[in-house]
Image 1 (tube, rainbow, N blue to C red):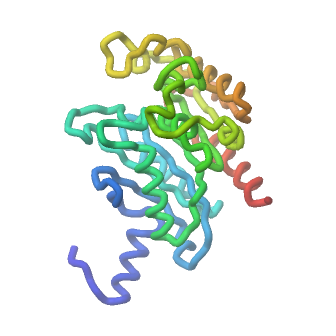
Image 2 (tube, rainbow, N blue to C red):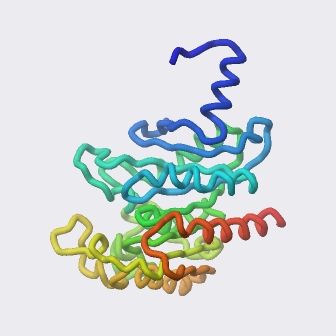
Image 3 (cartoon, rainbow, N blue to C red):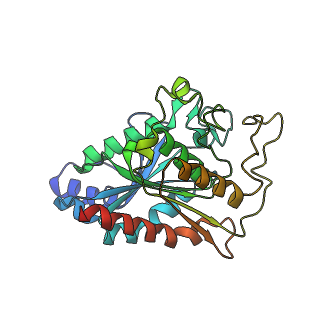
Length: 284
């Protein structure tokens, strides 16, 4: 479609593509990576918003599911939704899981997300120096590791059904533990900052399949002890909750009856958690 230069056309294009359920944007920091948002239309009139970053799973299509699934929540809670999109095989190798561990080749996904947030904060004239983050499955991988590395950036974190977890174990290296965190990422673990973040963990009690989450020798992410946190997602998330609580983190744990690995069936619990945190945050 031809770009039109009139003021009316520009305003109409912004209303269609930049507000509500937006177009997909390339990241200025790394155009290989993309994002899609829900931005309440009131932002166009200068209304101040909070921000939720919602991170997709391995299939990536949940970026759209989350954008749309949180849209009503965003509208009625003055909260924009930013969903990064990290394509499969971004380095040309067909790899699906690099983003879950924060780094892949020359890409630091945590830094890209921070750049996306800064870019969109500038675009929409918002203060998003702190934001909330939610992810399910592969996104749950990303969110808890982001929280370990960047707790000072978060006002809440909701971690849904990750297949593997990084425990706050100073005797084991990344990704199982955090002994070499500073050497690997250039940033030391700060437990006092993580303890300030309200953390939600959620998994279905019927989420019991292990075919995708059992690490085997020869696998790209296999390490000794890779399966020590438990066999199933509920077991592994419970181990993560215990590890966080020992560090002083206030963890709300939801084990949802009768739910398997179904991202959409947990969103109501996530929204309730975030709404409660937002209420407390805005009362200060």
